[in-house]
Image 1: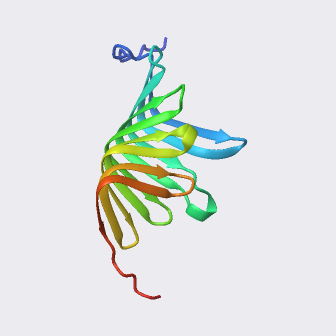
Image 2 (image 1 turned 90 degrees about the horizontal axis):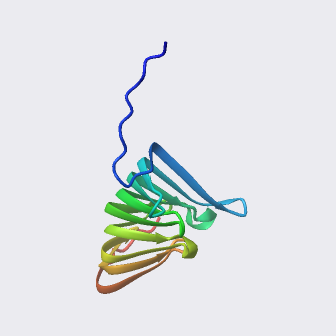
Length: 158
């Protein structure tokens, strides 16, 4: 006889709970982005998945490289495929672009990262800070909306 293992009861409003969640979005066979988390809890009524310890990797192609965004938490909206990241959100590209904010949303259909919070951005020796951000992940076009400050450091010749 096989012993019965205790099963933890799911919290209210959680229909499925997973450890080590991983989801890849592709379009015409090409990877668009990859979403991973230590824990995922799906709410069928809201069609939304709550994630903990999150990593979102947005493919950027050979010219720009991948952009890896980490956060403490996220909400994945299954219908729109949008991801709302919160808690120590940081992004680092393989080409050296970095940003940080407390909350960032990834709008999947537009490949766009947006935030209404204070954002810090650096690329090489240059640093920008402001409130509100739009970051087009495919072209790496970046816009800070207001209260912008900048520090530019001259790069040494190589």
